[in-house]
Every structure is written in structure tokens, then in C-alpha cells.
Image (tube, rainbow, N blue to C red; front, side, top):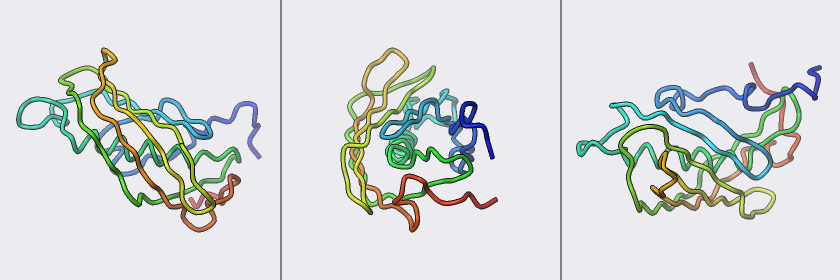
Amino acid sequence: MADDRFWDPIAEERESGLQRLLGYRIVAWEDGFAAVCLDLKPHHMNRSGVLHGGVVATMLDAVGGLTGLYCPVPGHVRKAVSISLNINFVGQARDQTVRAEARKIGGGRKIFFARGECLAADGSLIATAEGSYRYRSGSEDSAGIPRED
């Protein structure tokens, strides 16, 4: 059994294939809150040379889902699927690092809701989002389920 004093849920979380492909990383994660960062590279840009909206949407969807999936039990995991995601694009980024963060804003036993925003390196707002997520079977309980290796 892991020593809870030294257990790091971010370090234990396995990257998804898309996370690995895009290169964003979890930088904060606790019950009801999460944040991810991405160092911008040429492959993240659209034809106009600014951060592609699909990358922003992916980050906001991922961070919104994480808000309801924190699991305090070492070796356990919680999972969910996105039901809906509404995004408002209000700014842009061209270089440096962008950050998406979200908070869980409610829900019930099977479904939860999150609100988030994506920020440029200078703190300016790129986009806002609200999402709905459904827990996968067994993930409704905060203790989660044993991680399958």
C-alpha cells in the first residue's frame, strides 16, 4: 500500500493517447478543481497562426472532466464520459503556454457539471466553457475503482 503522505494523484494519472499527442499536462488537481497547461508548438496552430480552437476545446473538455474524477484512494481511478460541451471563444494565443482550468459546479450521483476557462500566458481570456459529464460504472463513488494495469 502506498504511503498517503507522499502519494501524488497527478503523477499516478496515466496520460491518454490524445493528451500525449497534444502535449498538455495536468498541473493542479483536487476534488472539484483541475488545471492543465500546454506549451504551444507549430502543430497546435491553425492556418492563421493562432492556437487552433480544437486544441482549446480538447483542453477545456479534459479539465472539465477531471473536476469530477479526483480520487483520494491510491491505486484507484474514476472515469467519466462527456455528455455536452459549450464553448465561447473570445480571444487568441500565438505563443508561450496556455492554461485551462475548471471547477465542478454541481451534479448528482451519475452526472456532474463543470465550468472552465482557457487563458493565454499574459492572463488574457481565450475561451470559456461549460460541460456535462456522466460517471462510468463504479466511478460515482469518490473511492473509485481499482486501476486496471
